[in-house]
Image 1 (tube, rainbow, N blue to C red):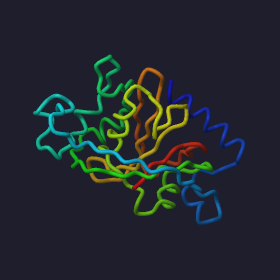
Image 2: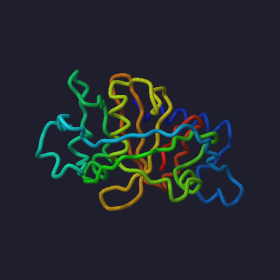
Image 3: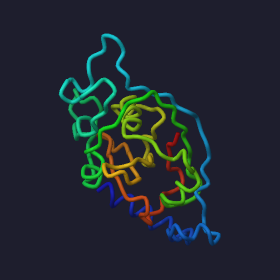
Amino acid sequence: MRRLALNSCLVIVLAASGFSASADEKADGGSSASLAPRTKIECSLKRKPGEPLDPPSTAAIPSAESFVAGEYFREDITPTARVKISWLGATFARRFAVKVETTDDTSLQTHVLNNPANAAQIVDELGARAESKLADVWCLLKLQANGESGALQTSSAPNLFFVRDGTGDLGVVDALWGGAGWEIGASPIRNPRAWTPGTRVFSH
């Protein structure tokens, strides 16, 4: 249902603007991402003294600095869920849930997309600072575990991150609050899909 709704929005945007979602058109004068910088957000997954492990399993954390994505990103909307996640896309589960990352204190820059643009165009505009980690995504999700207001949008507009998958390829991870929980999807960086204005983008 989520993807159908987003596809309908995409059809409307394409019809209204005549925008072609080909990354190659940027060099030919096509629409650029036109990202408007917003606030910066600080986030840390490092455990404070006396704080319980998250998730509460020593087997899930090989070292104090490791983030095992598959132990965190799980569909769970029960009252005890660390982060309510109502849907995980198959591409995300296959490409990203297998990752193990190191955790660091992070500072993320938020941006708002002003024009329709595909992922390649957004990455071109952000340059080297486009890439973030799954640990960064989780850190922000944890701050808004039940859909509270915060850096992540909880409206119908998505939140985008550019993250390397288990094979080292850069991809798109999108998070959308679906009412019952977060919906986490993923797509290739060269996917021609145009993200709509109002999409929030996170970078370093």
